[in-house]
Image (cartoon, rainbow, N blue to C red):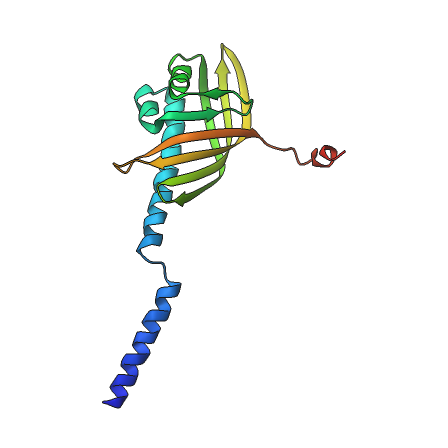
Length: 163
């Protein structure tokens, strides 16, 4: 019997030690939320490309603050109208360097956003950094609460900024 108790004690200690190193249910849930936010970012980009009013309205919160790299801010109604009216038409969107951090019912998504567009019939393109704040709703959906784009630094010009 003493030998069996030693094995039982050893097994218990190993199980306790493993619980510190193996991901638990909370880590798995967080990974699922991170994936869900990533899918919401993709769905928002698709809705912008398609000028899909219903999808845009479902994906963004009523109190949306949508900031452009120029400093211009838009509300939910202004953002939806800009796409649905086709004043600006997004032709393609490329996302690079994506990251998502989930903190409770909020998430911060960051990425580099490259877009080809047409405004008032004139083609253009932009490449900006973006930070988005997403909020998990009671029904489990993620909605965009805030977005701020910012100009990316040209590393060739960094040395001239300090002069």
